[in-house]
Structure formats: structure tokens, C-alpha cells
Length: 193
Image (cartoon, rainbow, N blue to C red):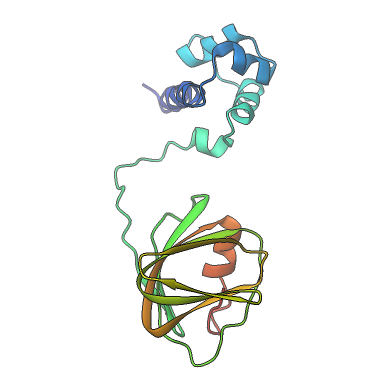
């Protein structure tokens, strides 16, 4: 099988799987794409060549971008080997691939001498405290998040967090906007959220 044929087969399988996962019949998907149900069926079964004029409306209707449909990189090595990066009172380990839409990070915080500056940025954050206690500042509010608890918040609210009474470790998940603000913050200064 040629490389192009392999890519087409992967795309066909993904299209059918996404349609089934979303619970859409061929007729329902056809109504969302202005394509005929028979055209979609022929694409899924390999009886029709995949072209951009068909692939673009299908991707949009199935709520997936073309990159996700066409990505045929091997999943042979599914293990991620995080490498610690330290800056100031924080050490971080990237737990997901940098190309994903959601970024997972493990973070170790040491107690800070001065309060963190609150920041805002587009996105949404979630974290789970593995060890210790974290002070989450959200605007005027201060919330203590204990080991075994989590917090989730919109990041357009001014926010910062810090370890209290000893080191804390947490797992954080950011959308891409949050990842840019947290992971790529100016490393010349002590990072803040």
C-alpha cells in the first residue's frame, strides 16, 4: 500500500469513527455538510477519492480540524518522558506533547517570600493538589486548596497561586492560551500565573 493510500485509509476510518461517536447518521451528516449521504458513504468505504472540497465540510461538521484528520504520525512511542525545568520557586514537568490542544503539567512550588502578582490571560485553568497546600488568589478572594482537592477557573479573572507552609506539588491542565501564559512566561523573572 502506498503512503497516500495509507493516509486515505486512516482519514476514512477517522471520519466514520467520528460520525459514529457523535451519533450522526449519514443523512444527518449530509444535512450538516451539504453533501449527499451516498457521497459520504462512498468516501468512508473507499469508493470515492478524498478531496479538499469534501474533506473541509466533513471536518467542520464533525468538529475536528484538518490537522487531526491528516495526522498519521506513529503512536509507537506513547510514553512521554518529562524533563524538569526550574525557574525561581517552581519546577515544572511537561506531561503532554506540546502539539496537543490541552497541555498537562506537573508543578512543584516552594513557598515564596512575597505574594505572587496576579495576572490575566485568555483561557481556562484546572489544577489538582497532590502534596501540600496552595493559596489560590482570584481577584480579591483567597482560597486554600488542600492536598486531594482541585480548582478550576476562567483565567480572565486576575489570579495567582503559591505554596503555603512547605512545598506543594500539583497537576495542571491548560488550554493553549493558558499554556502560553504559564509555560512560556518570561523566564528572567520568577514565573507567576
